[in-house]
Structures are given as structure tokens and as C-alpha cells.
Length: 229
Image (cartoon, helix red, strand yellow):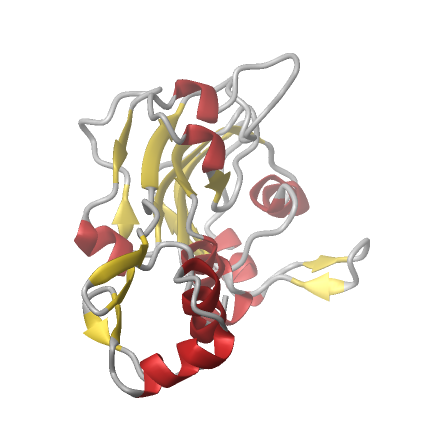
């Protein structure tokens, strides 16, 4: 909502008067004087006029969870337990997922009620890294490293996947870093080299790392540093 509209409506002084008091430097947004009458103000910002609260800022929520297998990456599901069901927060119904995991996949899931934050994190042009631990049915050939780096053509979408970093950790274990997120992408990429994923675990999104001490089903709020990263 634009600042003049918010001050005029919630301050009950009208939009014309709101513009005058804003230009006069009498309005603060999150403690700072704001003189831009058309400044967009999100629902989390506290707005004051002459030191009196016009609107209390909403509560930003940023959560990480260690998703167990069998739990659905959704806010609601009629048949299965969802990640939101596991969160004990009075405002959990406001949360949405920042990227999903398959029901069988485990690991780091992020949830928030801050749409601007989640858009920045998931924007394709940002190329935010998603890091997975992969276990496969068959031995992963050494040549797979180069194939993943070249990318795979998916005819159903008529696209070639972005270069991915495959680090071999064992005969049937690898760490895979993607900079995009497509439907069943990891499983489809391994299928292209004639292999099958039997276990998949996400350990990192950007600079946010799933802590070793956070047990499956556990969750916590992100720190300020994690949110800003």
C-alpha cells in the first residue's frame, strides 16, 4: 500500500492531508522519517504520525524445518501430515513454502509469511544454490560429473538444464548443487544416466544450512543473519 493512502486511511485524515504531513517529515516508517508520498509500505512496517502509531507493523516469520520422509511440502492436505502441521506457532496458517520437496525427500525446507523475501530467494535470475545429498541404486560413473555440468535436455519442457555440480562421495553417493528447481529434477537427471535415486536429502539453500543438531521433524526460526544472507 502506498504511504499516503495508508496514513490517510488509518490515520483518518484523508489522502490530501496525508501527503502534506508526509512531505513535512511528520511520518516515520520503522522509526525513520519518510517523505515519499508514493512510497510502497508493506504490511510488516510500523507507521507513526507525530510519534503516534498509525499502524503497528506485522510480524515477519522465517522458519527452517528438517522435513522427514512421508511429510508433504504443502500448507494443507486432506490425507497426509504437512510441514505446517509440525510447526507450533500461533500464526502458522500465514506461512507459505519457499520451494518444495517431494514427499519422500528429506532435509531443509524454508517457510515464511514474507512474500518479498521468498521471491528474492527463488527468483531464477538469482541462481540461488540448492545442495542435495543423493544415494543411488547403481554405481555413479565418473563421467557423470561432466554430463551434469553440460546439462540435460528435457524434451517435455523443451529446455536444457543449467550446469550442475556433481561431487562423488562414494560409489553410490554424491553431493549435487543446482541453481534452478524443476519438477523432479534430481531424479530425472539421474534417470538420464541410467540410474535411480533411492534417497534424496537437501542440506542447503543459498547460505542457509540445515544444522546437524536439528532432528527430522524439528524446526526453528531463522536468525537475522540467515534471513539477510
